[in-house]
Image (cartoon, rainbow, N blue to C red; front, side, top):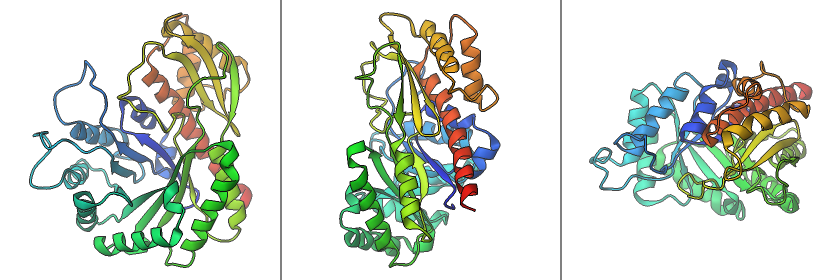
Length: 361
């Protein structure tokens, strides 16, 4: 994974994974998504079986012929889940199953995952042989020496030298007032890493996707700055000739999103559309006032008329937006719009990164 690679953080849920599945072959060759297996809410259409096994099938169907993904078992199955438990830890079974489905992936842990999970991640690293990744959060950057010592312990326990370990720095939500502080913290941590053997890769990820639509009037459009892009670029400039991190983000989905959270009764129609420096937010209104199926064609037409639209040939998602705009009624499922905007976003960032590094040379 080189510095021009891209890591979209993606929960293994139907809409998010459809968006990845529909990106171009060129995109699949150069991006390395962080696929996070979370326990989803129960849907009426769900078949019986472990959510982990279904997640593996979804990963295989989506990314079998793509670049090497990072895979984290964020939520573990219950011990009563007879479809998934055996004498081995579910994390070990997960990666064996992925390998049998033809998916070469990198297992992911965090510094606070200890006990049986830590033992299992080390066992997977030894058995599968693809190395491993450690997902670091902002609090891991506070005391670099302590975190680096923890990383050294993980390396020793797993038998993976630094050259086979990827570091995924996940800042989650980035607030504008804290940009200077976060930039300094990231740079200090990277400077501390410079004193040790180089890791296989380092990625800096975060998000400024709106937490909610408060402050954005109904039926209006706004540009929200992509602070994660600005921060990553500032870090690259500050690092100069030293090694800089790859770029990662949460696509068009807020990092706090939890599929199990209820409250979809009053959901608003909205399109999040990625541009150079901004996320274009095209807002409708509550589904209680107008059906989402009727709102989305109107939003698509507003997006196209506003001048930000890249055209139907840019991505699968853009083609869907153009098609939706031609009809009085369109897709009303929020998960479908996550897929559509994810498709556009991934293609856009791929092109944006290529241009960024082309200018550098």
